[in-house]
Image (cartoon, rainbow, N blue to C red; front, side, top):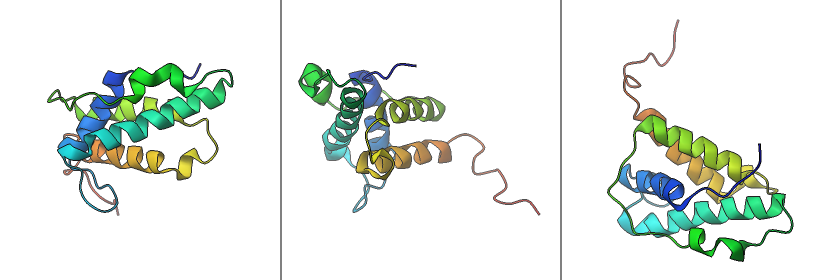
Length: 129
C-alpha cells in the first residue's frame, strides 16, 4: 500500500476527539485551545513521513493540510477514531524515530482514549483467573 497524506478532515477528527476526551498531553489535559497544536503535530508527522518515503516530495506541497482548520463540533464514534488513528499511524511511520516521537505518543494516547470509551469496555474483566 502506498503512503499518503491524510485529509484535513481526517486529522481534524482525531485532534477534535483528543480535545473532546481531554487526552493527556504530558503536562495537562487537552482543551479547546490545544486543538491547533495537536492537529499540526499530527499533520507535520504525516507529511514528513510521506516526504521521506517519496524523496522528491516536499512539505510545501501540503501547505493546506499543514494549516489547522477551526475546531469542529462534529464527533465520530470511538471505533471510527481507533480506525482513523490506525490509518494515521500507518501513514506517518516512515521516518526514523517515529515510534519514539511526540506525534506517535500523542496518537497512541488518543487511540487509547477511544478504546477506553468503547461500549462495554468498563464491563469487561481486567484479568481472568
